[in-house]
Length: 204
Image 1: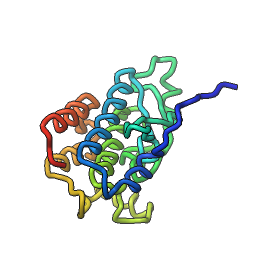
Image 2: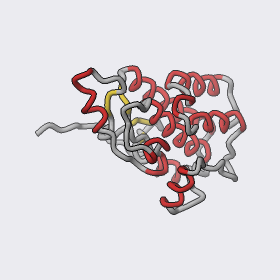
Image 3: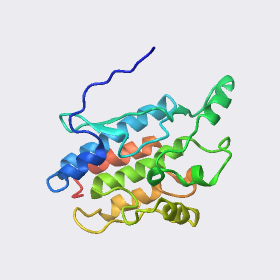
Image 4: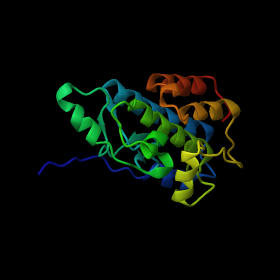
């Protein structure tokens, strides 16, 4: 039997880490988390592979506060070889509703979908979570209401409170959460935005 072995991550999942560190997580630490996720996303799409389930539960935090993508059970090739096209299409499964792209909830035919844009939507949800400390759709506990809102063109709201999300970050989150997949940024554009905001010292 084949097994995967990974290092122990003492800080647990991103969701648990943000919850436990909410009151003392620095701007720099939040920016570094975003950088780590964007680096991982860019690498996957360069392979090219879609992760397919990027959520606060599928990002682990190591002892130095670095984020690592895990759980590739939903992954598939973005541009499969002809012999793998059926495998890629049929391997797409639904992940966590709060991070899931609208097209996966509203379509039964994935053949013409730009698969890499599914991850971009999920990244937008994770970016919202890292910057605000709260998961996407924190305003509602009902997944049925989330599905209804998404089907009507809605998306996660901009959280109020501290820490706040500045306008430029929220605008980029909104681009990632766009209902038209082809209008979402690429993984390279995500990486460039995240690195630029870190270099500019944005007071997020």
